[in-house]
Amino acid sequence: MVTAIVALQIERDKINEVASKLSDMKGITEVYSVSGRYDLIAMVRTRDNDSLAEIVTNALLKMEGIKHSETMLAFRSYSKHDLDSMFAIGMV
Image (cartoon, rainbow, N blue to C red):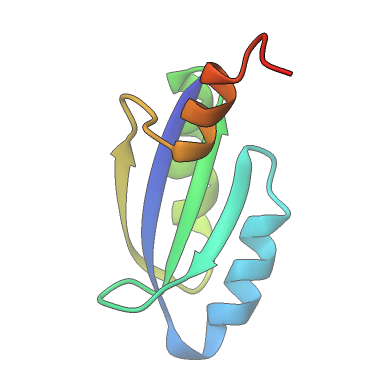
């Protein structure tokens, strides 16, 4: 599984519309509105890099209202939730 974090700058009057469209897209598991230089963060989880490229280069960048994007690939997860479940295996 490939996980990517896509930071997006959106036209101010289209933030809600773009967030809604993103959340309906296959492969995008979460969309967050955030503070800072980006307006939205989209979490993308796909089976391979080709599927990720399809979402980022064909779908996202053609979506009206997106001004700029930055895509970061996740190498490893250090989520406390993931670690807790891993160590809880076999525990009652």
